[in-house]
Every structure is written in C-alpha cells, then in structure tokens.
Length: 213
Image (cartoon, rainbow, N blue to C red):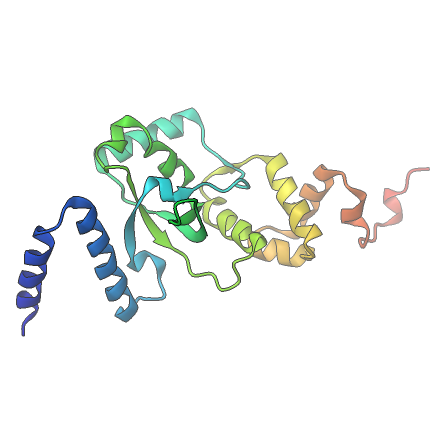
C-alpha cells in the first residue's frame, strides 16, 4: 500500500461526511498523527478545530490590548486568516457533558472570532493547540499564561500585582515567582510593594535606611 492509496481512501471516506462529522474525523486523524510524530512533544504539532462554545476564558489574564492593536489584529484575521491557534488546557465538562478548553494564550483571537466578520467564515469553530501540563494547578496555569503573553502584550500593573500576591499566598518564593514569570527579583519586590500587604514582606529583612524615626 502506498501513501497515495491511503490518501485516496481517506478522501473517499471524508467526502461522505457532513461538515461537523468531517471536522471531528480530521481532528481524530490529527491526534493520531501527533501521537506518532517526531514532534509530539511540541503543542503546535497538532492544531484542532473546536466549537467556540467549548472554549472558555480565564479570569486572571492581566494582558491588555490597545484599540489600535485590536483593530490591526482583526484586519489580520480577516485578510490573512488564523495563522496562530489559541493555546488551551482541558477544563471541566459543561452542563451538556462537553469537554471545555480554558484559554492560556490567545484571548483576543478568541474574542474576535465571535464577531460576525469571522464567526460565519470559521463556522463557529476556533483553532486550538493543547498544552500538556503535568501539574495543572491554578498557579501553574497563571504562570503559563503570563509566560506566553508577557513579552508581547502590556500588563496592567495592578493585575500583575494581584497575581504576585496570590502566588505568594500559595507558598511560592520570590525566586520561584521570578523564575516562572520571567521577572527579576526587583520586579517581584516592586509588585509586592504595590499590593501594600505587610504579610508579603514578613520574611524580608530591610536595612536601617528603611527605618522612619
């Protein structure tokens, strides 16, 4: 059997399906190929199309986009198409028992997909690539999101400060916070100062220059 014969049989099979069945079948084929791919450890090796209502936003992303950048992204998506998938993690099942995917990176690409200009073209679907995080805790998800978009976007300082506070309360050291989020120790300290919570500095030793007489 040649690869051309496989393609021919596969084509005959797919042409008998409706669009939704075809997308589901192609996703299964991609997942199968991904499992035996030399690049199976790279998430981008497998991009799937999932229904928009199966994708949910997270509530901790401090990344913001200016109106100008948002318009440019929309124009790019309309004229060039989706060239980058939305990065997701498996979430929970919704009321209809469908598996949901939580956004790690690509919130604005997801948001724009709901607008009429794109919604109809991509038939209420969204391209996603799935991360494989072994320790899928909330703090790990937050760190992954920030690593993905920190270099590209602008973060609201207050939101970043809240995240540093939350990670500190979860027991993360300043060094781990800095290492995981790509920050210097000075950046971590400044964000803690913005929180203004004494508990964040309980183990820090200050020089006498900080003393107010």
